[in-house]
Image (cartoon, rainbow, N blue to C red; front, side):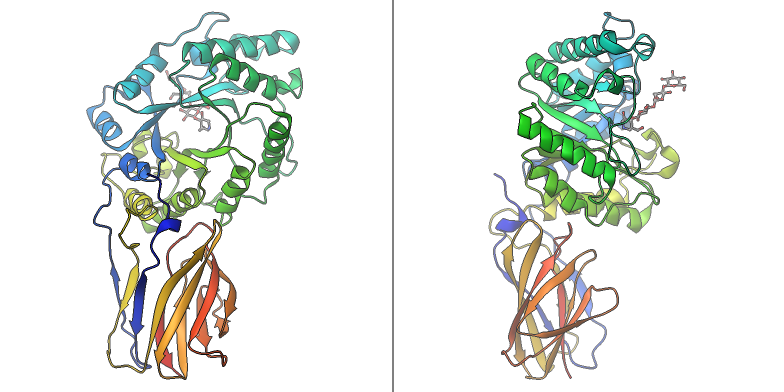
Length: 448
Ligand code: G3I
């Protein structure tokens, strides 16, 4: 059963009674009694998967395998399915390490993302020196052979990886493959479809998370063109390698939704976020919430298990520390996955404001209103004094984009709205552009 936060009952949850002088409000977080306790199980509640990159040479590490088997239900080979690994000599295919990963996963009911059939990087030496028709044919033969070998075992293939240039052009990356002709990508997709009609076929790239970036727009135009011309593409992978110089963009949800609107699934394929503590945890939470808010965002894969397993270990970018302990980022991801999907009949976990002085002069009560993919409505009913002042506090990066039946002002951050009567009674409302964060606002009421 697929339930999103859109299907949560319209329960009235937040009731705030605070006097004009009260300041020490107590925040109480409630949790769902039915919350799942692993990443895979919590993602599965909304029909999504939660995966990780796996290295074959770590499958003998008991801590590593213990976490893998407990937490994840999708696996990507970190290097073992790349062109240099699977076809080290032209026409001679080598699947030993890839098979170890695929067999480990499938024997335990995990799915497999194939990574990657065609890429300018990690080409075998013999291919690096090829060009023209010979290279095009060698690439297509590689796609056909590898996808045929794994036919029926792969959930999604990264058919083409990282084919767009960084920077402001939105153009293709120069490479030996690109120089065989601009149609090399669609030719690879057609070969992959013919070889394994059951696998979802993805285009995968990095630095495509920010909707306003030229590279994102370039990939978007290619996918739009492919869909218009019937090129067999089913999904777009967003690698999602983040750090302080490349943070999670506030428009991430917009990016995922716009691609999904082209008629493809979107997947977060190599997620890691450098940092630590609550800052890192909040960024992970934002990424998960952005995916959950997009119906066609079908799963999330992190690029490794422990920080020490990461391709950039010094940035401690993963969900488990080097000893295999769960980090704050793990807890925020699990919580976000559980909050995004509510078992029928339960209320959404939220934050309530405890009255510090019951008997105050006004009460503000929040009711959930209509929801859309990018925004939701809230309604506030005020009882008590008619000269009420209600403070509505949003969670960044949410923004109020409309109000009714109130006169409102905002603080400099734009997340704290002060609402006063405008002569239209004591029920007012507002629309929140959630930007990937579905948390409900908190309220307090005073007179003034
Ligand atoms: O296994 C050899 C080892 O025998 C040798 O001694 C050592 C010396 O350099 O190299 C080892 O191979 C390294 C391999 O990782 C396994 O650890 C390669 O040098 C190294 O280049 C390779 O890096 C991989 C990188 O892709 C190559 O581009 C990373 O593990 C892998 O995480 C990374 O993954 C990519 C995705 O495929 C695409 N998106 C970006 C992502 C991160 O760069």
